Image 1: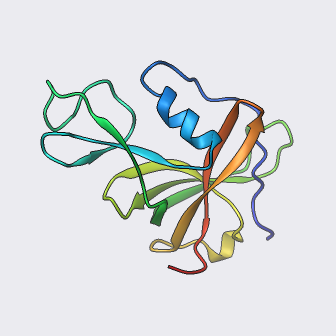
Image 2: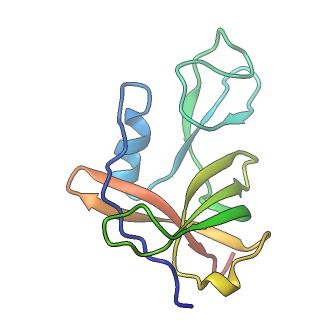
Length: 137
């Protein structure tokens, strides 16, 4: 089987809390949040730290490198009808993100596969992070 598609038609919801993430994504940078009190990372964007609820998290640039934990190949749901891969990826910083994986044949998908973030341009205002096989460290 060929690699699943990356066709995307539904833009993400952007709000005040996630705005810095989406602004950085347009610039090709992947941000995560860090608790200013504990130094621990968190994902998904929140207005408060999950490690110290009274603290407001700060945005930091992530390495963009991680590994595939698990995935599902979706064979229905987009307008083109092409299959695509939804996955959980553990970043080097220790947080787990939900994203698409592209550029790899279904037969080559496996837990532990080294991945790196890339960005799929949806329109002028929105770049969506996706992950591709990592070719080097």
